[in-house]
Length: 134
Image 1 (cartoon, rainbow, N blue to C red):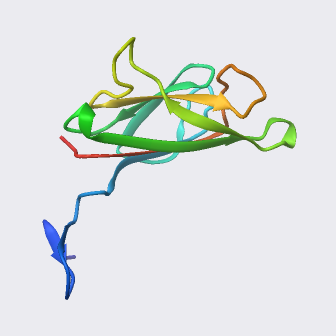
Image 2: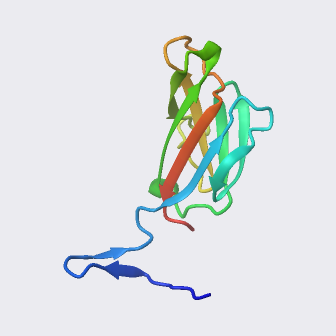
Image 3: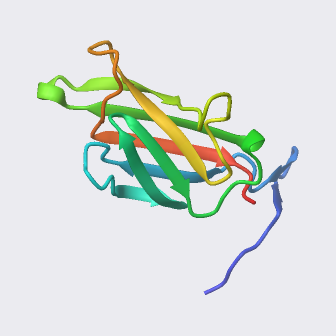
C-alpha cells in the first residue's frame, strides 16, 4: 500500500489549495440522553461529558493550536413524545468571561425549541470542530 503526502494541491488552472485548511479537525455524534454519553461515531474525540441537563463538554484527542483559531457548529434533535423537537446548540463559556473553548475542549449547551427555557438532554447531538491542530 502506498501513502500520498502533500502540503498543497493545485488545479490545472487556478490557485493552489492548502490541503489541511478548512478540513474538519474533530467531530462527534452522540446520544446526550445516555448516562455515559458514548459516541455513535467520532473523529479526534476522546470523550463527552454530560455536565447537567443539556450541558456537555467535548474533549479532543489532539488539541488545536489556539482558542482563537477554533470554530465549532452543531445540531441536535430529540423525539420527545414523537414530536421530533429540535434545539439550538450554543457554546457555553468555560467560566465567567472566558472562551467556550480551550485547546482541548468545547463546551456546548442545548436550548430546547420553545418548550422550556431550561437546557435539556437531546438524543441526537452532533458537533463539528474546525481549527489548526497543535
